[in-house]
Length: 177
Image 1 (tube, rainbow, N blue to C red):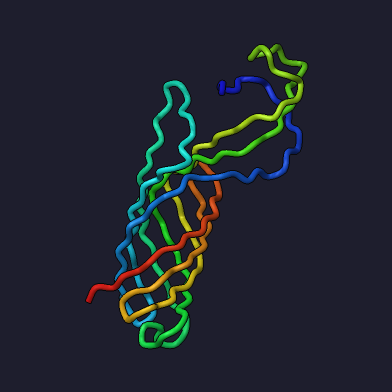
Image 2 (image 1 turned 135 degrees about the vertical axis):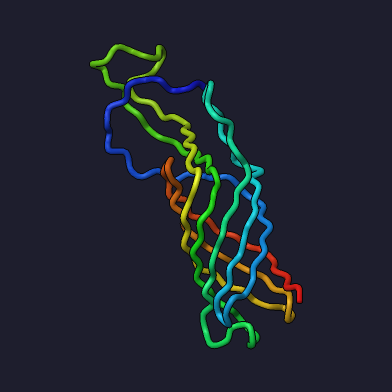
């Protein structure tokens, strides 16, 4: 529960995988051409906020994304059945990532934090963002002419505080004519 201020040595730790916030998203999408659409997503992270460092900026749970989808197949909105797509997106969001990391203290440096073992496993939180670029793919299955289910997987690169975030989403889409 304390902020780590020890002096670790490089120990060739493998790439870490962690859990990011869970978001609820509301979106609006418009078909521009027979197989291309553009949408705006507004989101709110309600699970997964990490601790904030003393005098650090608080986590911002809101997100905004502008995404373009290319729907595969001939005239995808004129036919029934599965409608696959690929997407590109850009937006603003923060991601608090949680993972475990093993560190080894440098015995050559005086302790900056008393009570640390020579080797220990830490619960690490990394705040990534503020902006991101994303790429992904998914599919929509229409139940009616204006209502369907959507599954999507995407990878986004957050910057300037870097992290690669892979996410999956499921939802319902409703068309309004």
